[in-house]
Structure formats: structure tokens, C-alpha cells
Length: 198
Length: 198
Image (cartoon, rainbow over all chains, first blue to last red):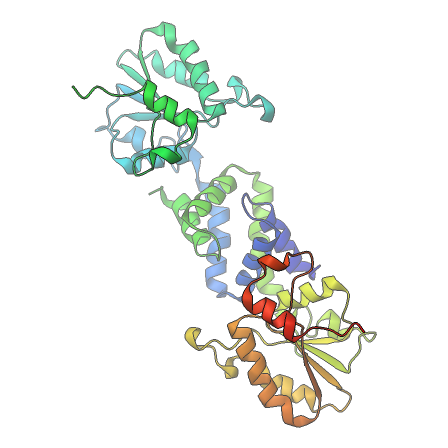
């Protein structure tokens, strides 16, 4: 519809996740009208993230060095590994400040429809890490959805026999939510996982 | 929260319109994991749109040359000018294929709260164009919202005395919509602007 460069930009923006044709157009016109220096910085940030950012050799979290800040930090408890799907999940857990161990980022979840099997995830590398005697507990923190549960089940089957404590994050009612609005499965889980107050 | 380059990219993306912190993070991780060539193309498209795209000297539509394709097209009727707020509006009207005249892009609408007065819009340039005798009609196609109506009212006051026919796009019920779901103002306008079928 538009002339050359504007349409090219709309097309490229429209390929990003969560950006439909209307937002792509809106963002493109914003870029067109915005300050040239600001937009140069945006373009540079895209190029530089591809050049600089790698994945940690130990846990596969994003990192600008060969090992990430968390794996380098000697104050973190090396005896507990929290297994998550993505680097975004590491950040979400870090924000809670309730975990002081280390992580292992699988790089996704088992999803046969999208063609992702256990071999595409960093599960072999997790098994290698667990051969270290100092590891006492593995916390499985995959998403509480179909793919995350399938991945958790697979991990339990793989790791169940090696004698390390395996735990899974609690499912239940979200804090601040209304009981009557909770879905049936969540409410069922909240009953199953009820805690003893006596 | 993240290390250097990832956080820089999230910050830059978060400044774009309609992209909140969560989408900025999602898009940043998409860029991180996507094909390097594709992302180079996105960065280039941003830089190139700023370098190549200018505004038409006649109508202020976006253009890669000094005058836009529509102003250059001798088959377009030079006697009718459709006044719109943005280049996006030109494209929306072009898609309808119901207008064969030319355009004038104001570059926004009068919005005292955002500090946009008539002097920031290309209204003087419109007046200059209207000194050409061949122009018979000006269609005011600003948005049907508060700012668009204020701009239309201002234009009517400015142009009312120069003896050119002034029209405004019809307000009324959107085609395909339900009468009972129309808001009061729209329904009121539909009554006022009712057409004669007899």
C-alpha cells in the first residue's frame, strides 16, 4: 500500500510477535516522525543484542559473557537448581527475591504439535549438571499449562531415579484473586494442595 | 533487570507507542532468538525509513520523492482536495477507491491539551493551495472525535469566506453494525443526516 521504505518497515514490524498490521503501521509512523537519534539507538540496540548476547554455558540463561551473572555469583546456593522454560522466567523468579539457588533454562517446553521434543530442550545438560554431588534439590518451575505439565512429567520420569529431591511449584489460588472466579482446575488443585494450619 | 544489551533493547522497544513493558520483553526475546539476517533487515528498515522518507512538498503525505505519487498522478482530479489529519488516513481512504481527487495532510489535529494549535498544522499551506482557481471543493475528513471536530470547525471558519464548496464526511451508523449498540451521539447524527429515499 505505501511507498518502498515505509511499507518495508511495516512488513518487518508486522513479523514481530504480538504486533498486528494496525500496530505495525502505527509504530512505523511513530518511527518516521520520531527523533532520528532515538531511532538510530533502537536500530543499534537490535543489532547489538544479536552480536553481544549469548547463552550461559552452564544454565542457558541469557548472558553477555560465557557464564551468566547468577552462575558466577558465589553467594548463590549451588545445592538447589530451579528448572524453568525461558530466561524470562528466571527474571520473574528473581523479582520475587524468594529463591537464592541457581537456575537451568530448558529453552522451551515439550510441545509435540510445534514439533518440540525433549531432545530440543537442554535436558541432557541438566542431567550432566546433576552428576555433581553437591546438588540436593531440583525445583521444577515449568509453566502451569499443558506443555509445562508435560515437560514436568517428563523430567520427573528422567530424574526420579537419581536420588535427588524433586519439587514442583505449588498450584492454587492466585493471591488477591476471588475464589468464585477461579477456574475449576485451579480450585481443584488448591484443595489437593491445601496446607495444614493446625 | 537484565544484563546490558537485552535491557537496552527492552527500554528502546518500550518507548514505541502501544508497546508496554511485557510486550517489549516478549519482542526483545523474539529478536534475541530470531534469525540474524531477519533482524538485520528490521534494523536497516528503521534506519532507511528515516533516511529515505520525506513529506510531499504539496500535500505533506509521506513520499520518497519531493512530491508524492498521488500529487504526481495526472489522472487524479485536481479540483477536489480531501483534508486529512495523517498519512494513515490517506491510505485508509485510498483503500475504499471512492475518491479520485487529491489530498492535504494537516499533520495532526488541534489539541490544546497536547499544545497543538493551528500554527503547528499545515493550514497555511492549504490556504496557499486554495488560491489556485481550479479547486472547486474541499472535503474535510478529519477524525470524528473531539480534536477532529475542533479542527474541522476551525477550517470552516478559515475557509468559509473564500467561496469554495466545503464538505464534511458523513457521520452515522457504521455499516454492518447494530442500531441498538450505536452510541447516542452517533445515533443522533444518523437522524440529523438521514437521507431522502422518496
